[in-house]
Amino acid sequence: MRKNIIIIVGIILALIFGRMLISHINKTKTSDQRKKAAIPAVTVDVIGSEDVQVRYETTARVVAKYRVDVLARISGFLTRSYFKEGDFVKAGQVLFEIEPQEYQYAASRAKANLDNIRSQADYYQKQTARYEELVKQDYVARSDYDNVLAQRNAYNAQVESAASTYRDAQRNLGYTKVKSPVDGKVGIIDVTVGNYVTTASGPLTTINSSDPMYVTFPLESKDFYELVKIDGGANVNREVEFIFSSGNKYKLRGVQDFNDNKIDENTGTITLRATFKNPDGELIQGDFGRIIIYSNNKTKVPVVPQSATMEDQEGMFVYVIGEDGNPKMTYIKTMGAIDGNWLVSDGVKSGDKIITSGMQKVIPGSPIRIVEKSVEDTSKVQKTNIFTKIMNKLKK
Image (cartoon, rainbow, N blue to C red; front, side, top):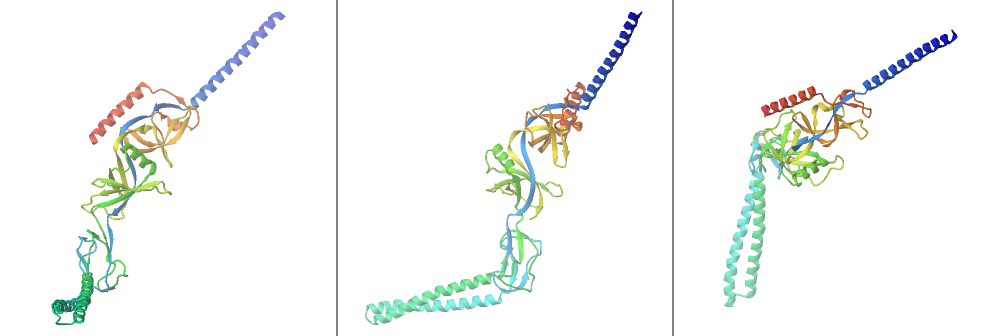
């Protein structure tokens, strides 16, 4: 009887311990499942590359090829203006008149004085010739000949001086007509008719040349060196496009034909300049916008699916799989898009592994669970890419 009781108690204890064991196993499985469920499931792809024409976009400023201040070169009252503010003028076109009478009188006096001295010089030139013959025949003293010769030489010297004075008077008379030194557009008239002007009065107006126009822009030194490497040299002309501050693109392309000989120590950029034709005057001195510069040659650049990128206040980023297998947030710089992919100029390289889906739950540095794309998802992606390519071709 006692033996049976012991057996029954043993069975009961075994059942209790078995139940406790099963319960512990179930709890462990549930905990593992919960932990596994907490690790985000993501898909990962390797970054590829495309053969593309590299482009960089940066801020730009329109600058006139010539900017000329129109100044008075003599003193006098401003009597006339021959243009309206904003007119297009040609080089040599008369813009202002400074009262000319005083300078006409000065030129007339200088001319009369020059004529008088020339007549005296001519007289003594003839006298010298006569005395030269007479002195040979001993009809006049040698000293008389020397006196006439000295008079001739003195008047010849005075002729040069008087001629110089006359030319100077004519020059000043010419300055009474203030002319445009270049082709361009006239700005605001700073000194109006009726005012007395001098050489220290400052600009009467300003002329900015209008065709062609320059556009200057800074480019990061590493981007410039990349262009140099791609195109095989620094002194290479490259095509550029200008975008107005309104967002509209200028209808004509320009040529980047100059780069500065130094890097700015404060900004780490180099200044480049492009030349644009401006037949309709749409590009205006001082205007700001953006410029796109293109490489002449193509090169391979990394491409990242647009769906694999996210953005915050600091810019666009992707999750790169590090050597430890955990994701790392990496900011990228793009230079355009093609077939649903960003063309990347900085941040990642071909061969890097990035997360392409499931990024929303990813925590940088925390474990992830990499899963394979389903056949259905792959099919959808392929169909989307085909559709995107067809739409891009239709847009072109």
